[in-house]
Image (cartoon, rainbow, N blue to C red; front, top):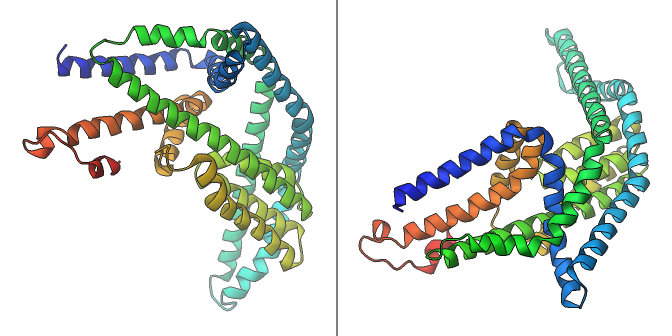
Length: 362
């Protein structure tokens, strides 16, 4: 097979993958979640197997334990969060009025009171806040309807554990079968790329999940301790959304600051809310992310943000789930292709040896 044929083969395979996702997007969610669960629980099953357990026993125990923990967490946390979310949506118009009443004197103090456009400025402020309230109201309604739809997806609750169990039980057989399909001439190179993809994906997702969980708990405890209304839901949602670089924190900070302005009269209390978010970012940037994620995953924040937004725009929630794995695969393949180029005569002008510094650029 020539190089051109290989390129067209990979392009064709990618086109088939995209077409498959577009065709079966509506039913893929439980299968993707089950695949993700199996992927991340497989190391635990391997350790139990090494300790003497059979694969079936290890799979049954790990799967049952995982979904039991998830069910207990949902039973304890979701009702509280749902109650706060409903109350937050109901109080949104009043909160907007409070924010407008408190912010307007400050803004009017900055603007020249004798300016001819004073009245138009007030009208613009009122209309802008009104538009924001309507937008947040529509967003809350869409989220509420989405939560209700997910709650009614019995298939997700039934199919996901079944898919996770069978994939986890047969994981080693599936890996062995796929390994046997590799072309013998290029099998070592392909295995190395798969190893790098696995390292990148597992390192990022497992590490980022831990970061999001710890940040969510920190923000929820900190904001609740300050007496901020809906502090628990704002804190946990901010932590969950932190997997989107910068966007999650900024969104949580904006909502938290708005709630602080609407409910607190003492500037010190508002300042303490800001301090919680600043401390959270310092902890994330200097301790959590370097320790739990690190630079070894080679996934730049801008690339992750682009992948998440692109996946969401193309395939909705399914696209968001696929965004990071696809980004990891593309990143590894691009680095491999660049390494091949840097080692080729096309770059070296006759020399076929690449220096280590060349590959470190990517």
